[in-house]
Length: 215
Image (cartoon, rainbow, N blue to C red; front, side):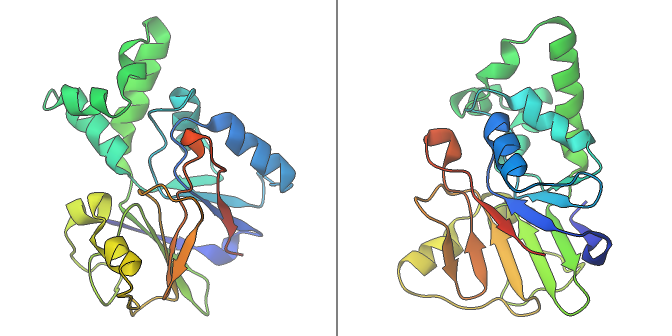
């Protein structure tokens, strides 16, 4: 699924979180600090739930929660390729060794959860009534956004081209939506440029986990 549309007006508060990479305890602490209400609030993720951090299974378990929505990141993509037998080495080199260390029921549960990542959308379209907010892992590879528009999924999951242009001082808005939230590239601080927001602040590398309140 490329796009998933979300009626944002159904929720009281909506938050988006940067790349988790197995940092479930950090997330739980942040949600507690914000009085996150699992009955009325929604948490969105820019993807990369897994790898490198201490609790990839705990982060995968978020996908079962009715208050959580996620796009697929490149680490989920690498895991899916490895489970299909295509490229286990790439995943292992990028933090996937935790999976191969599991045994028994934990291994079965993790394999099932990772297979479910194939069903994750690549783009979340949030309709707030008066504005549209878009969530994707790495980029929206077009100058104009439209729900259902065909775009290169590999760039959505992997590309750093637009961020590189921003960092070189060549910034441009993406028309068609109010704001875009991306992860993928760990930064010391969130980067807000034009109408794009890069919120992976490298929690797994000892930096803080970034949550942004959208509503």
